[in-house]
Length: 200
Image (cartoon, rainbow, N blue to C red; front, side, top):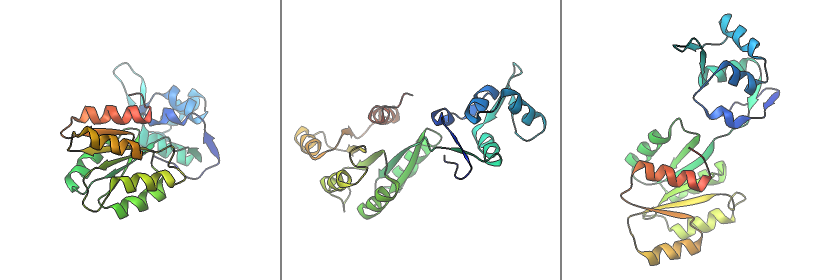
């Protein structure tokens, strides 16, 4: 999620990864008073729902639209993840799994696509299938590490092998972590959160 344009920069952008906000939270993010937010709801300028306890809840999409109308800008707080896999089903599944999290997902099915996307988007993490037919993972790692973003980018290899020697070779090449197939969704999420130092 990124809002482009406007004149003000919201400082506490990490708060904006939530799916909904109270009036107080949105007021803090926008640097408005809570009364201003409540008044906007009352005038129909900002859509909100009511909880059983009578509190306002504003969905993120509605908050974004409201902020655009007031020329507010949010620095992009989302971590970028590049998924590299030639199985379309896997790409779609991973994108669906992480949609709505504080991660922005890009995907590529070839080494060429992955290289172009990596250069353009400068991902925080690359999740890559160890056994892509046109890809030597060591070449990918070397390419990433040579880029401007390479020192900060984390590389997580998904592999069907449990060969310790292979893992050692790739670790020495610069891969940060491994996940052996088959794996549970929670395992993948935890590994990504650990590499990105994100608290669930």
